[in-house]
Image 1 (cartoon, helix red, strand yellow):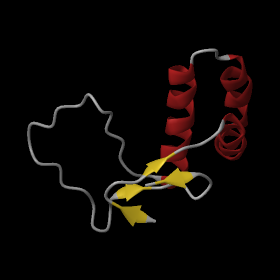
Image 2 (cartoon, helix red, strand yellow; image 1 turned 90 degrees about the horizontal axis):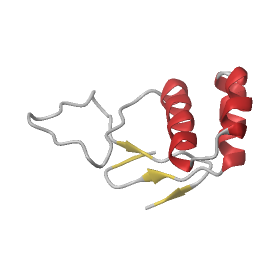
Image 3 (cartoon, one colour; image 1 turned 180 degrees about the vertical axis):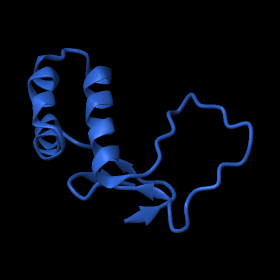
Image 4 (spheres, rainbow, N blue to C red; image 1 turned 30 degrees about the vertical axis):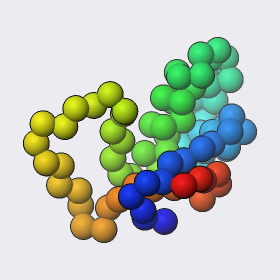
Length: 83
């Protein structure tokens, strides 16, 4: 689902299922990680690998216009989403 203001919200269980599909060897590392930000990084990379796309963190300062691929926009993961 493409939109301009969507964000994905995945639970730990959602991320484990995603990791099982993308790279099962990462699941134990994800499970052992205590810091939520690091867990989010692992999950985000798996989601980008599976779905493709772009990720811009909130602290990125864009200095030139970003040209996204045709039809690209913010993506809401179908498992958990909010607008």
